Length: 249
Ligand code: PGA
Image (cartoon, rainbow, N blue to C red; front, side, top):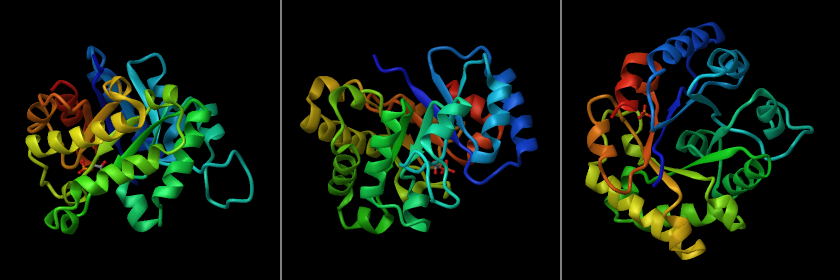
């Protein structure tokens, strides 16, 4: 059985002070939740303060990005060893906003995935199509290829630690979700792709989330689908009561 994983991607929201407030609230509100892995991903500058708040709770810490190198002349970047030092466990890699605005490619995504795993950070790898690609019938081909590229060169044991987030770009921040059936179908394609690389047994162990306008009202239907193992949540993760509803799907 795959344990569902709900991750809140706070994006570029919340100052450190506000992040402490929100995580304090989440810690109290989510204290009784069981059977679901909960992760919150604040901005880099908020990570240490949030870690202090959630220590000893059932909430884990994730980052939104990282560089693949350990250190060096990469102005403005943050390395995996820095994240590990703070107590970060998960790191979102290849979010569509990073691919779109910061020129991330399947190749840099793969470098980051390999690097994260070598530091024992668990990557949450984002894949997903644009509306145009969906309309052209390219969705399955695209997510299969993004998945293959992202996992290129991973050893079998490492693959089990990876989380994949299927996030159709047209559903992110738009209030428009993929139907539960469509999301489930695309996630099946991702699982088959992993199966073709590492065998079905391994593919069955990898958790694959859905992301894109998940909220307290639609989480239950999405999470009821057999292939969907959780959610990557943007906007609705910034309010404790809404995130609570999602986590309690
Ligand atoms: P959203 O964002 O929930 O606000 O659509 C999801 C994401 O980008 O991870």
